[in-house]
Image (cartoon, rainbow, N blue to C red; front, side):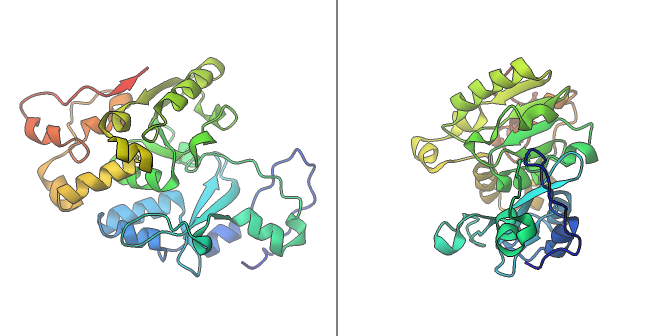
Length: 288
């Protein structure tokens, strides 16, 4: 990665370091194995919107760059990951380990030797782009991108890891509606974190039992999440386009919390396919 033309001044240790926009601009690309995987399940228009909304980048080795852009449009860092283009699973061997843009900068540019990282939610910038949408929080960046293509009524953000849901990052939740979607086996931990957030930040926050409810013991062990659930349903229904042509999101939903609930979406809840036009969709598996 080439150094930026503009080099920041040395900053006090308490001040957050931001990455110049030129790095994001140069990385902008569909040429990652992650996007290749998406092409197996989603139409071109959906993928284009997701790549543009999340400003996805790619490396020369076809790794995806998940940029962390905060609510003010400042770039905190970029998470570099390799995926198998056929399975969509992360490559976890030595050459496919997670890397970070700020770490690469520290190694190649002495002006970034004292880089002060403070992470934000992946997708946080969407709160500024689409301020009226409710929020849905998942663990993985991959999951946020995939769910955004199926349920675009919400701003889908990613915590980055199990412990990435925290008070500091969640200050952007103030006066917003949020639904948490923990991975299988992580429901209790995120439930406790939800209580902490509710005590310190004025917001309407709920947690979904969707994955906990559907996951088998084997899936819990494998870290099953809502993206896995979506892909499973898409495989069963052949293609996204075919399923969408037969079923549409029920138009009767009249509050944002339900809009973020996959139980109300025909692709994610096959039971709705049988009940559209006759009975209301299933009640959401969530707790406030």
